[in-house]
Every structure is written in structure tokens, then in C-alpha cells.
Image (cartoon, rainbow, N blue to C red; front, side):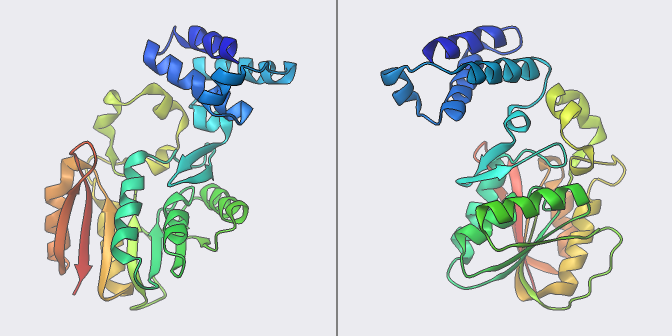
Length: 279
């Protein structure tokens, strides 16, 4: 297996920095073997021919720019193995921070939670897994994403309901029902594309990534408006945000009557989250 790690790292050296090559190579071998890196070093067992074929296929796809998570078909998020494909974004570490924040603040009761723009369902599933007594529902405009989320819920045996819903055009049918609304909606502007990695632009769904430059807060505005209708008095709204627009977003929330507005930094000290409450 050590030879396989060296082989993968060498093949990837054309496209990745040395440290990243080694990290990816170790991860691939760990995942395919089901062994920790320490066990690999100690035992150094050999791969079967089929495993070598898998390695070659993975390397070719990586060199072609496909994200490793899509190749493997899953990503780890808040200690859960979340299935992913091209219908959904690959869960990010920053979003884990948002989930842990909500769990830390709201695990002492059984909140009713709505995850808007739920994608793979990673947020909704992590919240239900972290707050067992909570009722959690996820909604998304994409039927492909809802399919992925439902499969994740079934495979993980986590009771979360996922439904199609267009937050821009659909009218809410419920009034004063939820304790928490959480969302990591599309928030990257078109002008930011030139700074993004090619493997993201070429593989991840643009519907889940981008908004028009002329109206970058469209999803936040609609979700905040939704919160005015379906959040209980004193209920909380949590967003993952584009740090470029935290001031404008704060002003918008104030204008809609939200209070206790917090702008929260992520682990990289970027203004990544906003929390607030309905009066």
C-alpha cells in the first residue's frame, strides 16, 4: 500500500503541490483499504488487482479535474458520511461550523428546524444527529438534490423529511411554526468566478453556487421574508453568508424587524455567518 501512495502522489504531482499530493494519496488508500494510515505503514498489505484498477481510474479522473468527493461518491461532514454527486455541492468545513454553533445553542430542547436550500441534506442531517429530539425538515428547488438528500437520510437512518420548494416563488403554507430556519443559499457573485478553482466551476452545480451581481442578496431577502411568516416569536434565523455583503445583509435584516443580529467569524476569521431572532 505504501507503494500505491507513492504512485498516486507521483501521478498527481503534475497538477497538485507536493503536500497536497501526499495528503490526497493517503486519503485515497485509506478509503479504499478501510485502514488508517498507521495500520497501512505497519501492515503494508498489497492491493488486489481490482483495487489497483480503482486507483488508476481515480487518478485519471482527478487529473481531469473531477473532485475526489464526486469520484468516491461521498464526503464526511460533522462525523456523517454524506453521499454526493453532481446534483449537490460538496459540503464545506465552514458549514460544519454553522451546524455546531446551532447544536451548541439549541440542544437543550426539541426545536422545529427548517433547512432552506438543503442540497445534499448535510445541514439538516447533522442538526438532527446532534439534536435528537428536534424535528428537522429540508427543502430545495432541485429535484436531483432532494433525491440525494432522501437517500442520505435513508442510508444514515436519520429521520429528516426533504421536499421540493422554491423559496423565490413559492408561497409559505404555514404560519408561526418553526423555532429555527437555517440556510446556506447560493451567494457567490458572477464577478467572483475568475478567482475560483476550475474543478469547482466545471463540476459543482451553478444553481447552488451563484447569484446575479445585481441582486446578490435575493435568497437572503426571500428567506428572511419567509421567516417573518413561519418563525415563532423569538425564533432564530441562521445564515452562512458571503463576507463581502455582511453589512448590507445586516441592514436588510434590521429593516425586516429582526433583532439580536450577530455577525460571526469562521475559523479563518472571515465574516461567514449571521444569526438573528424574530421579535
